[in-house]
Image (tube, rainbow, N blue to C red):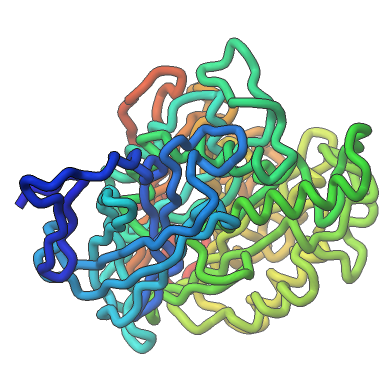
Length: 494
C-alpha cells in the first residue's frame, strides 16, 4: 500500500484522517535531516533521526517548538513494513535539539533490517541497517567502506553517494564530518554564518551538512561507526588545548566552545553511549577498535606542522592517553582481523628534511612504539590501522623499525582520501619522498573513499576515487587494489 505523510502503518494499525472530518493544520515535515543507524551488535542497533522542519534556523533548533515530542520507530525485515519485528517510542527532547537515539533490541544476529520513524503525523525516509554476527561465529563476508574529511565548501558529496551504491554492510567515518570555518564567498558551496563557536552554531552546521542528499543516502545505506577528528571542534585541536592561540576567546570561552562541539557531535551521530573510543565486535571475523586521538593527547610542545619535536620520543608521551592505550592493547587478538579506526597518519613518514607531521603519530613516536610493540608481544594476527585526516589516499606497510627498510612488516595502514577537502585534487600518484619511505606503497591525490571486502582468508581494499567534486554526480572508479592475507602482515597485489 502507498503511504503519504498522514498515514503510518504500525503493526497492522492504520492511522489516518477519516473522510468527512476536518484535519488539523498540517505540521511541516520534520525529517529533513534523514535517518541513520550505528554501533550495531548481535541483537540490537542504534537508530537515529532529528526533528527539524526548518533545519537551517540560526538558533540551532531547526524550527521545532520548545516542547518534547514523542517519536515512534519500527524495524522490519523488508522495506514494506508488512510485519515489523520491533517497534517502540522515544522522546525527542528540546534540550537535545530534538535528536533521537533509539536502541532497537531483540533482533536476530547477522541479519539485514529496514527501519523508519513517525512523528507529528509524518513518516521518515527508510533506512537499511544490520546486526553483527553472534560472538562465536564469523558470519558472512563483510563489505566495509570508510571515509573522512567532507568540507561542504570544497565540493559535492558524490563519494557518499557512490558508497551508498556499493551497498556496504558497514561504514566507518574517521572524522572531519563537518568543518567549523565561516562561510567564504566564491566556494563551490558556502557555509552559513560565522565560524562555529556556540552550541547553536554547531547544531546549525550539522543541519546544513545533513540536508545534503548524498550524505543522507550513505547514512540510510548501512550502519555507521563514527569518531570525530579536529574540525568537529576547531582545526588542530589537541587535547584540551589548541596549537594556535585565538585572541578572541578567553580560556573559559574556549572550554565552553569545546563542550558545545562535542555535545552537538553526540546529538547528531548514531552513537550508543558516551565514550567516543569504543569497540564493536563483528563476531569472530573482525573487531573494530575506534580510537579518539584528539581529546586525550599530550599537546605538542613544539606546536603544529612539519617540525622536529624532541618530545616525540619521550617515554610516557601519548596521543591516546594511558587509559585508552591500555584499553586498546588489552582488547586486541580476539578476532581474525583487528581493525583500528582512528584519525591521523600512523606510519613513519620522512620528509626531505627528515621531519614528520607533528600533528600525527610522528609527533608521538613513543606512543606509536608502545602500540606496535604491544600488538607484536600479544601476537595479534592481523592488525590493520584505518586513517583519515590527510586528504590524500595512502597504503602503508607498518615496520618494526622504520629506520631499517629490511625490518619486519608487522601491520598495515590504509588511509582514505577526503570526500571533498582540498577540492578536485590531481591525477598525481607519485609517492612523496619515496626513496626515504619504502614502506609507503601507494598514494593518490584524488577525492573518494576506501571499500574493503573482509573474509577469513584476506582483506581486500579498493581505493575508490571520483575525478571531480566541483561538479555534481561524477562517477567513481577503482584506482588501485591491495590484499592483506590472513597471518601475513603487509600489502599484496591482488
